[in-house]
Amino acid sequence: LEIRERKRRERERRERERREWERRQRERRKLEEENGKKRKKGKKRMERRERKRRERERREWERRERERVLFFPILLGRRELEIRERKKRE
Image 1 (cartoon, helix red, strand yellow):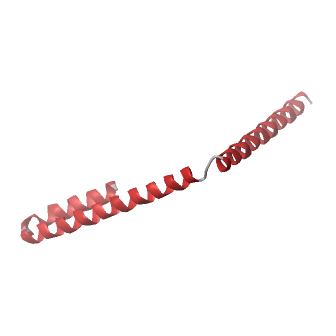
Image 2 (tube, rainbow, N blue to C red):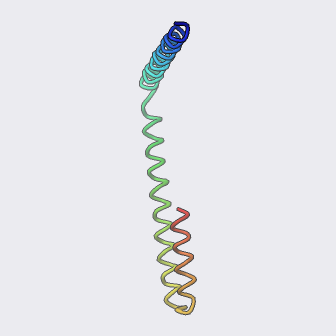
Image 3 (cartoon, helix red, strand yellow):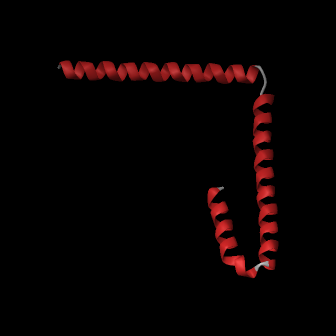
């Protein structure tokens, strides 16, 4: 009986905490909407720009790497390994 009671209290506490959390989330969302979605949009745009820049740099690097490899066929094996390592890291 005592165990059941304790479990019931636990469950109620969790429910209360969840409702509290949801209420806080709703309030935060409302506040965000009130004082500007602009900030959020700006953040997304910045992230996208950053991603594109990194992608462009990577392509540029790979192109230079390929050109360099064409001049040094002997080093091709090592170059390929380096390129693969770099891709894995990104």
